[in-house]
Image 1 (cartoon, rainbow, N blue to C red):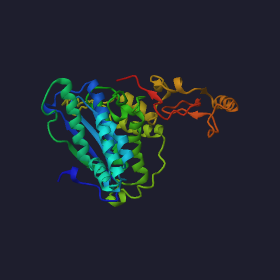
Image 2 (cartoon, one colour; image 1 turned 180 degrees about the vertical axis):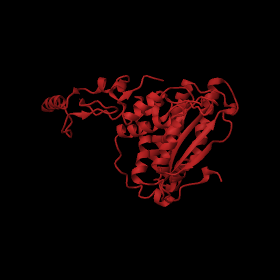
Image 3 (tube, one colour; image 1 turned 90 degrees about the horizontal axis):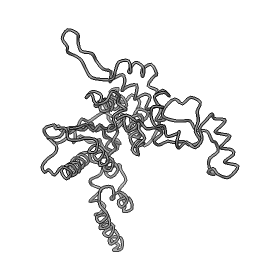
Length: 371
């Protein structure tokens, strides 16, 4: 049985898959610039097709994706405004204008069925695992072949997929396996140093950092919505009550727990002294011990090795009393928003102690320099 065809039952919310695909002959063809384009295509398709990328890893000759596929029947239908907002992600201006003219003509005709048929051309592609992977591989192939003046297939076979139970334990374990790939391949010493992975992107300050964090935080959402989901529950109970979205922990808390898992699972293993077998490339033992001792928290010293956005965009930094004092002065001058009632904001992304910032930088709080 092909797991790509195992769909979540109507009303059960979503299904998760680990997907893998390799380049023909397993040649190393994706370097830094190709990986950047690959990731851009991946993120555009994620938004256009409505399939969430929980985490990912783009390697030199293959990729890993952990994908969340919603129940198509439970998702709202596209309307004309939404379609025209999405189309520029994948189509040029001329194509978007053509569709806009079609929709306008359908609207003016008073024929609602005509407009619905136009929308369905695009709607039928959404929330579908096979369509998502087909378009991803096809668009990456077109880009790669044009850049390199080549023709023919880029991929050695259709993608592999594994259907995953939607509980936190399963999803965190598979996510960690994916994000540890560059460490196990000897490309980097620490998972956050690899730019083309979900965790690496989430730890950075690029425009995709918040999207990557949202993917990893969604794993925690599953754990909160479905406690004990990996304990032998049925599919119906595993995905129950998904309309009740629990409040998620902060990224700092999610990162702490996930970092602890990565450094526990990613520890290097020395080969047997006699047989030379059983060794595994991984994170240095002393580094793992340091992270485990800290409970997964990112220490201030490590945060300061990155480009900390608070220090350039935080507006005011200091003790809570100092920041609040500045805020009150600005408020008296009418220079604060009408809805804001307090000044000091906790600084995210590391343990900054008692330091506070005037601005709450939810997106791109820090940027790594490695990788």
